[in-house]
Length: 317
Image 1 (cartoon, rainbow, N blue to C red):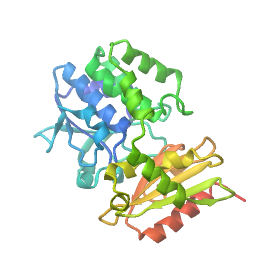
Image 2 (image 1 turned 45 degrees about the vertical axis):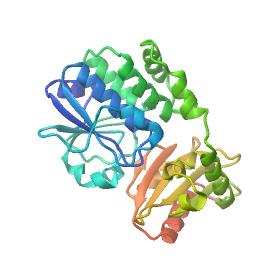
Image 3 (image 1 turned 90 degrees about the horizontal axis):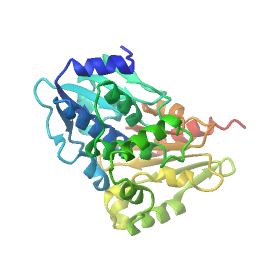
Image 4 (image 1 turned 60 degrees about the vertical axis):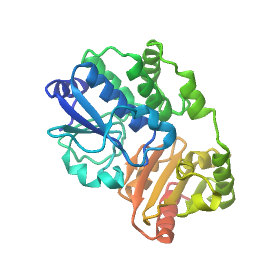
């Protein structure tokens, strides 16, 4: 059932025990949205936790500190946030997809798989929707809610640089700033700091990108074991599609990252006018036109060929 913000707030108001799920290869939006919703529900006196995500990167662990549990509590209603498709759950949580009662999401091309869902593709970040729902519930933002909510909002709008940034995005950011939360350190850490390990990965990626359509399409395969080869932490390998897309002339970029278990993860980014979600849907994933992801069990070479072909279809000759 598709819900409005008011209907979603009523649904939450009528229940008292919640467990929030985030997607695999989690970013600041899913983790920040989950943490902000959890803090907001707790502010109403409700019981709310975030299920531990085994794939959380170290630099984002602060968002859910003190909120997570290793197992779903008894009788908890499951809520998925920033989750466009069941296959986007962490590997360890894939069997929970059919148990999720409510999905709050902002991906335009997504799979409807829960009994209740609040989806608004016009929202720059999923956290913007949660902000509206918490407002409907009468929650007053405090610093504990503002830090993850701002992190989520800034993450999915590229610190307010992407085309999905709207006036409402700035309204949410202003509300977070009004709490007195320290936001500059978040911007510094997420958008203005690059580790030496990250630079090593970027250098490797630069040497291994394959370009098509006169440089408008770029694909880079990240094989399993790359972190050992480069001597960097595993979390530094992720999030390279945005870096590839930032190269001059590139209109659509994708990375294909192979896990130790052999599954391949696709991350795609594009400028306005091209559709990453349409590409990732071919692999059972989803997302936005400008940013999307998917996972596939196909052999790496086959997955790369199909991914490249799907991207080239966005560029008719």
